[in-house]
Length: 512
Ligand code: NAP
Image (cartoon, rainbow, N blue to C red; front, side, top):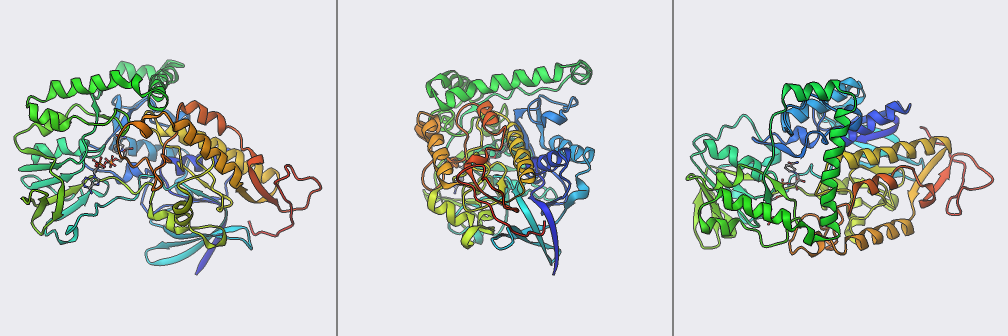
């Protein structure tokens, strides 16, 4: 088996993995490799190709600040354009040549003896090992499709497709189709399917709150101004950022301040649906913001169509011919689309990361909940930084802002490690505990805790461990510098005075 040694291994070539590669390169760190199971950049924006896939964060904000795009065609971008943008940025910084495609990381193990991570990778049936001094886990929280645990799921005789694994060679025109789920993906794919299928059954377990989508094409003059007028693009990005941040206040500290948003959502229903019965069915029973607030102009018109039925009877099982609801009726279909989300707090990826004492990330988080420090480091997993880790998700603005904050932290971490010749860096358990206690305290009045819904924002312990509470500029502030005092570190060479009492020094020889 071949073994390659690098300083830094990055798993994942989505927004965060690519961003990490660019920032490391810009700061003089060239000895890294990106490993990705796909064939090009984009991560979730490469994988989600279902009809209608689009972003519900405005285009102006949904790009790297250092590689803004004056040419976005619309105020909200669609998947193909975002996918092209990400690959264009990768080309500009020549990151493709540092990336191994079709390469699946089957396990990543911390080796205490050498102070390195060993990654087992597989490509076309060939196993290779990569040894790295530092590991950056940039796999993204929305990468592992969640298939619903419904009796008889495997017995269905037709086609089952998950929204995140769309097969664009299959044409569902004229077919009888069922969609399970009414989340962010479902509300985008249903209006597109409804246009061409013979009949569509939409299975709703929980109705979402939906605001109108104020999407339009940018004019040529606007695009010219974004490209040519100094400061205009940054200013507009700032305006969008500021407006979105206002929502963070309501979500985290004062859910009653979101009442106007609820009124807009109710107006959206009243305007779009005539039938009183259907209006009742689509009106949520939890506080707006408890689950992601969705954006659509065509969801309600789609489910009001003649060829579409919104089914709210719970699903009892799946038979070889269709879906059986709790009233005993079998709804026969040719195709079942499962738009049932992702394994976020229970991703299978967590089983593959093995830290100190052979403990997997899944095992550690099973015990203590999905905790980390600044969304980045986890006690028990030295020299590893997660991108979009615990408590970094958002319900109100662009994840790219959070990713760039983490990139600042990553670069300062790597610079510190190089300057101080650190061989082992592990966040202290007390620092991690205190950080998570603060996060949960900050969450206490939030709509996610008190809004009366069940969501994937909570881990199995019932804590909201996927979301960042409050304003994103506070996260930017705490990730500006690598705060070594929160870490236990070991150095390659002995030194007379450790930087903090928690730090130790030693002499170890590492192939790095
Ligand atoms: P999701 O928001 O988690 O929605 C999953 C849907 O499936 C929910 O309606 C859920 O119902 C339903 N469901 C799950 N298991 C079920 C079962 N066993 N039986 C019946 N219904 C079931 O997943 P998603 O729509 O894929 O979106 C996930 C995340 O991806 C979003 O929150 C967002 O962050 C991101 N996303 C973003 C965009 C964008 O525009 N930027 C677009 C798509 C996705 P319950 O609500 O009752 O659980």
